[in-house]
Length: 269
Image (cartoon, rainbow, N blue to C red; front, side, top):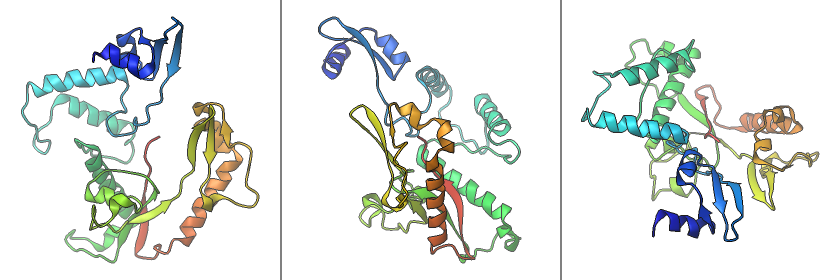
């Protein structure tokens, strides 16, 4: 089946411009069987998974650069080598998000090991900021009485490597058959959820977040963009969220002198 036929089967109409579609992944120009044209928006539910962050234009550029590089180098190990694009990227990161606190840039070739690196960086910074390194002057002593844990969301997924799995809530994927070493090193909160029903976006709160004076208004939205509008930071629900988080932190039995929540880990939206 050709790409054109697949589009007809998928959308019940004819895709007028394949190139136009490739450049704007979320907008499709469709012509139905009665020659009526319309534009429909498609929501990419997997856009937060590791490699799909760049837009369509940047994806083409990245593919071209990777092909050019692959034709020149078989394998490059960063510990002893560097090439100009990677160096420029590192400098931009240090002058941007890392300005004022970071002095190194770590590269990873996949999402789960990137999470492992992020965990190491966060734990190191937390330990330094809170004086936990003062007991390790020779950097050779290990003290298992100090435990560093994460604050994350239930239902989240960060990757399949051991550290990434430890930073997620218990699920069928962390059971003994799949991850026999799993302990779950963190406090995992129930997040609000959003659903689309009858052309309305509805916000649902987890059971632990409900209260007697629960706010009924502001739970339904006409568009997805209104849910993520920054003006909602001043809504009444913000107080509900803050109260819920504070309550869970106070109730968490793991917070002791030797146990620290040292990293917040949240999947991108």
